[in-house]
Length: 144
Length: 144
DNA sequence: ATTTTTTCGAGTAATATTATAGATTATATA
DNA sequence: TATATAATCTATAATATTACTCGAAAAAAT
Image 1: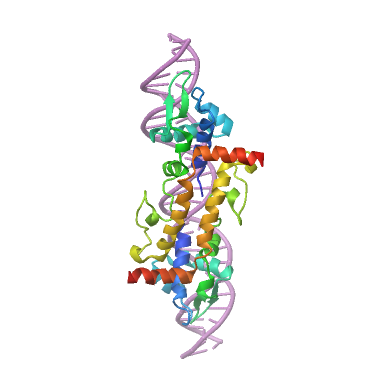
Image 2 (image 1 turned 135 degrees about the vertical axis):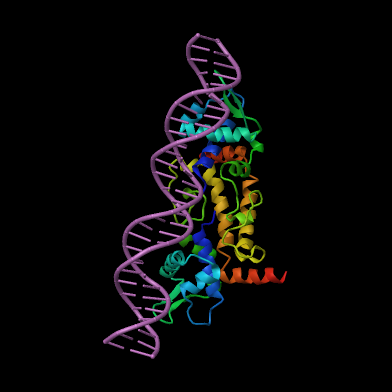
């Protein structure tokens, strides 16, 4: 399951992606729009900022804005920051690999073998889908 | 992440899948082979039994055996018993649907829209892969 | 009868997730 | 320079989930 942290992160980035040519938006504003607990969002935005996705400015008139084109922010990167691995088993993870503690022989593990395929299928979608795509899908869904 | 419960379930079914024409195997034997905490495995096997995948027999000479051809036991069914939904968001789940509590407007949610695609990709693999396939993959991996 | 083995109901321990609190630092502007 | 604003930092509380344990009952074999 996707954590709330990740959902909040995506939602916040979508809000900021719609705010591209405006002055930075405050945490409290984003929290209000998306009904996200403010203090929790604070932590999440900080993580995204430290990962280079957001620009932030302190003080009056400060706030957050996207540091990149929404077309270049992919779900896979966000999820790796907020939830960690994409794979469903650690031994099938590209970026967060480690041995499963129950595993006896990784090289011949049929479970791992299947979940590498699952990871690849998931990864394909998540690394092709950007914040801009999410925004586009929303407007498409509205018009349907 | 796949829970240990699910991994244990798959491993137990694989063990029983290799034991097809022999007398039923005891929980303690399976637990020993796969190094699964016995009492925990007990619960898991009971769930699988109640779902119709296993035959069980009490008393001396009793134990567990598969109730179906390993070719007809698919990962998707096991995972739904042990972990519940396949989808990463409840609102994209086929068998365990419910609204996300953070969600304001499901019909136009871009996140949901993407994760329906992810679910479909995952589902395709998990509903095509059986216990027999896992066993086959293991022997293939050994010979490589 | 006795032993073996599953079944059942409940409880607990460990860990992860979600959220909150309060003080600190940076910036703008009056 | 004082004041208000807003992000940053560190810690901790609350809640949920996962992983596992306990003990006794029921069924079957010898």
